Image 1 (tube, rainbow, N blue to C red):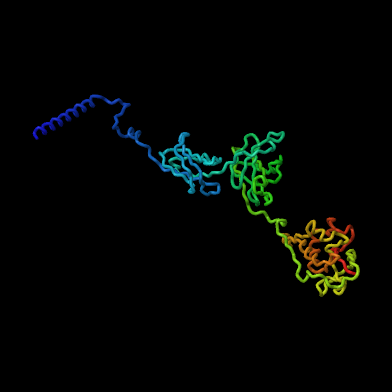
Image 2 (cartoon, rainbow, N blue to C red; image 1 turned 90 degrees about the horizontal axis):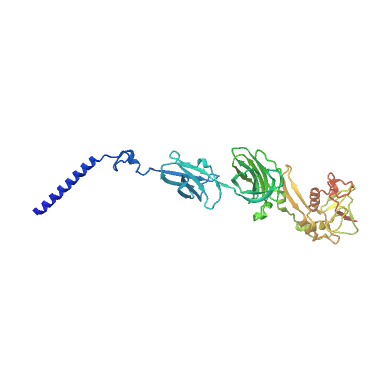
Length: 428
């Protein structure tokens, strides 16, 4: 055991001597001023410590203020990617990066062109959270022949295509910029722009016939018109297209398409109102029909018809001869009603006193019903329903419209109060 203590003492003495020699050597060798020792502190120590990390956030919105999704947010420093993330339904991307200033790039995974305010797309320690609004940027790819700003013949352009909403339109350098709108639904549309500078916006027709001058008035930078259901097909090839021209300073503008409502109903789009004959009227006439069928003389101002107790009209008094209306036999002034119905409609469009549309009536079906009980002369007794048919249709179709020369009487003087009796006759 004594031998072991002696060995340990000798080892400890050796270590102390080595330490003293090393200390003496360090004191004898001065440090170069540009080569600091490895254990220096203060500013030199900060050079080797990792930079402080900071939280950054980029929120991306659509033009309507809703969160954008499926958008790539890239963070760059000196033109090189530092980090990137795909924005999900939340509309934002968060980053943990060394505290510094960064440039933000917004891209679409599909390669769709996007436009946003690049001057605002900068992250700094003082602006660690930014919000960017992205717009789809139109790509001029649809060819058309249109007038050139440089004059001469029509030039071939690639027009930018747009849909509803806001679309960024880059200007065609040195010439006109054309935009094509293809609707997906009917409606009343407003076409305008959003730009700080003044922009000229004009409508020039369809791609197959692009007019040199505007064909619709632009009011306060806005063009408004209705696109009917007939202009919207199931495919772009069967859908009408509308060409606009934009001109302005700068690199481009926001082209805005707004659907403001439904197309006002046209009378031609309304369903037909179809009167039907009452059951009691659809019975063959069983009264006396002796004598020849003689047409009423509507040129005689004294012509009078009176409704009788039987529900039919009678000549001169309610006990006079029954008045019949020709349905499939000729009258002196117009083709018979059956012939007319076979080629067109006996109809009327009715309006209210304030000028608003009320209804449109078709009488073809009514004529067909009464024809089932017409006699061999093609006539049936005249009742209120048939009288209203002739009066209403005649007024609308201008059968006694003398002011527009549409009357059927060939210059004969006929009192409008009795003109509706032109297809009527009595047996005498």
